[in-house]
Length: 338
Image (cartoon, rainbow, N blue to C red; front, side):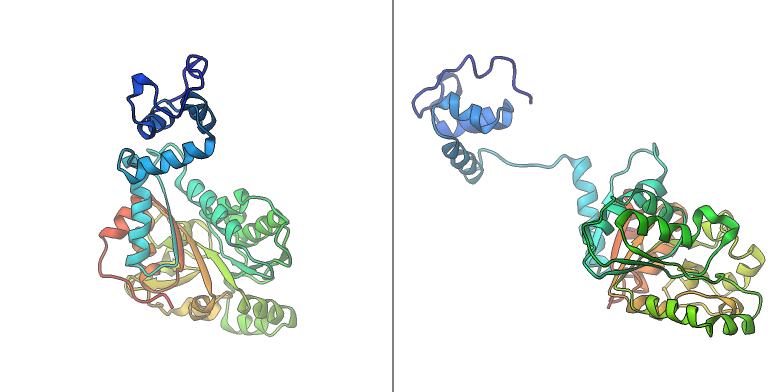
């Protein structure tokens, strides 16, 4: 409650005893004025006639005696509770669940923006940050807080280029993040998917690509999202693969992709003919990166996101409240992340 005009003016400094209308208990008086009337500690001290330090002590005593109980509003408590439960269920090192906003804002934008704040807050000097692709990653790359306070940062593209949908491309996400945090940008100068196996082998033998892959292997953290295999998914929209190319993987029970690699509902890699043409980080190498931030949410991603969690690809998760509830309802429990 905000202070009413003239609240302090109507109470003159008094001895260390409660105003009569508040009862004779000074601790109760301090608690009422501070928590109920919304006065600051200096105003409470003036009304009661004590020092501000005494008010601090009275407020602590009010909590100790049970006069004051701090209760979170249920709508604010739920995301925090879900984050703790997800962290325990999937053996995560960190989890952020953003509250439901009733569909007012694009979920990818909200989750990506929250993921950018998480990434920015956890950066350390000398970090090499691997970056994948997708709508949520694009939102993260456009909203991550600008800073040059963390020295010697590098941002590296971990999946080859997809020029069919440049707005979702890993090179754009990578360059955006690097520019906003003042980092060196290392793009992977190769297509994500080439025409033949021998073309892939030739590209991978190029000295420049060898060096870029070495940097990817030295990543200290990575940020990525997930994509399903259903019609209309980010995977198919990206132009990386066609529905016909995805079909054989679905027959092998693939539920989606992590960094362009197919996984089943238990998070196990699903091998196929595209692997010999794909240029980008392999799933075992992804799991070797110490910090792995996944930003993803929405009904269409729940199955593949659960698979990524169970498979051990995620150490820190940023998602939305509805997805968090769906993940909590999913079984069985996850394997160890390390």
